[in-house]
Length: 257
Image (cartoon, rainbow, N blue to C red; front, side, top):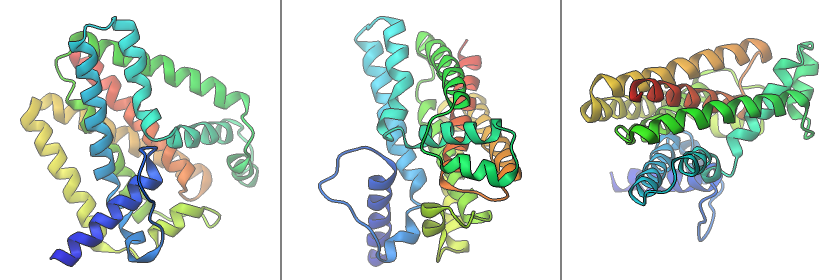
């Protein structure tokens, strides 16, 4: 048991270094903890969500102007991840909206240059993100559900990479999914069920509505990009995380309003 907990802690620490911009004294890489990075991704979501929730509460308690509060709170999840998933969102938007053949879309996905479609979709994302956060912070009644958004989105992300076919030219997605099995999927599913239960206790049906919106958003985004690219990758997963979290935020805004 102690050995297992140590392995999962190492997996959590590796995942923390890989998928966030939170400063760490040292970074892990390699070893038997590599296969635990994805199963621990929802725990990273829990940390990001807790910080997101805490920051929102502090801004509201400090009576900071609502527009400024909404702007800062909108950016926090992106800042905490070092804009990692946002990069995948922009790359994927460029590729899928090009409406090119498969090989061209895969080439655009890997292209480091930013295209017009990425800029357009970034503007759409920020408008909807800001509007949703503005409504949520204005009501200030269900801020804890922000944490549900980040945990469930990463449960979906971990499950999809562990379950779906990974594109051959995908670097990290292929590395992190190697040597994983049923036990890792069960762990992720258990975290998702536990999260849904906790937020049902926190806010009843509202909590389940937000969780459901995140899951539905992730499933739709992943189904779309999987069909377009015939596989999954780190960039495509980042795209689905951003879309699913936006869906959760919009659902939270609707029930808060």
